[in-house]
Length: 101
Image 1 (spheres, rainbow, N blue to C red):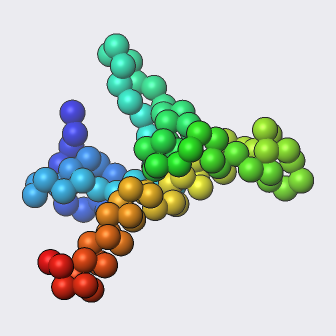
Image 2 (cartoon, rainbow, N blue to C red):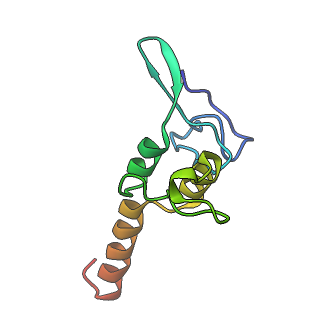
């Protein structure tokens, strides 16, 4: 069950007005399946942001991309902006600029 919070910026579900709090690189992301909670995989997080699979798998500190630390990959996804949301916002701004809305 989602909790209601008025004081925590990024953490406890939804506010009383129905707005969802945003997630950050330090949040713990999980899903519930068959009455068990599991952490989202990095690929699931990448897909939620609109990235291709393994988009964040890049060389890190002279290590091969296959050895990229998962913590840095989760951080990169958490700090990113969702492609779909940014595209929608850009389109709306352009429509306002062109006096279409």
